[in-house]
Image (cartoon, rainbow, N blue to C red; front, side):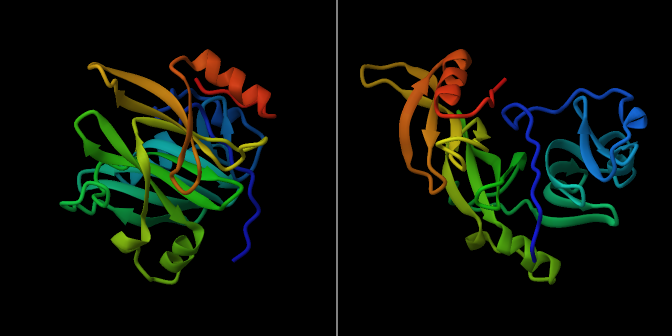
Length: 226
């Protein structure tokens, strides 16, 4: 299955997006972002179509005009979903496990990597940190062929409470994860770290977003975290 990717990712892929009536004014077709809104043609997908299906979308990443991947909650739990103009497809739902690196609950903060065709998301894990996971596009194709995602198909990448997938520049496909760490002499701190697609922490960048944005600029991209 060949896909044409034009992913649009907002902020740190961690927060719900403020809504306004801008979709009705948009002249773009298919899935796209207008202002901070996820639109399907001229309809607000979050506030309209998804709510009709009792889905409360909390994060999304547009893959192309025909597909959007999003995380959502409903009375039945949390889900990772694929949206198409014809409807929604469940990729996976809550999968509790005694191993916190494999436990999938509270799915949120979804983001799509253009370089590697991979979907990243956060699930609940430790008291002070979530777990960042990765799912390959091949497993999405399997879902379309009615082959469900198993827990071993989901790869734990690293701990983190927010993250951003770098889409351009020297570190395209890498992640910037905001991690909660402990100092050797006592105490803790939160820091943005550069993490490879396989989960290896390359280096700490800084505690402040401004310094992270400077790092992104010097690595060849105008992307910023917010």
